[in-house]
Image (cartoon, rainbow, N blue to C red; front, top):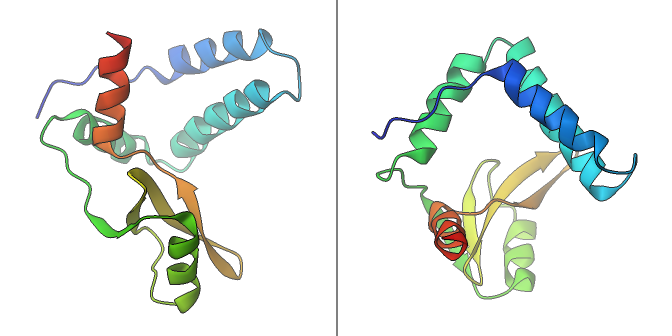
Length: 128
């Protein structure tokens, strides 16, 4: 497993706070930064920071693989499958090459964008 940088929660929250101030309150960016900060505070509050750190190290490992349960060509096909009732919270699927996660909401399942490691690696390659 590769050596991942340590997570300094206070430093990350400070950076998120600084970035939040650069955006208009209520903007898409401001909201996203707020959610990211609250997610980190929640993980810490629920005493799950060690679990998160382990996951963080795993996902950055070049050996990390996510099991993709199903592949779909279109979102319409994926939504039809979701409505069949065989999907389970936490399943990873691929739609047109992009990763998604099945998420349980009150009363229904939905799909959330969840880039797969190969997508993230491709994004990093484009930045180099």
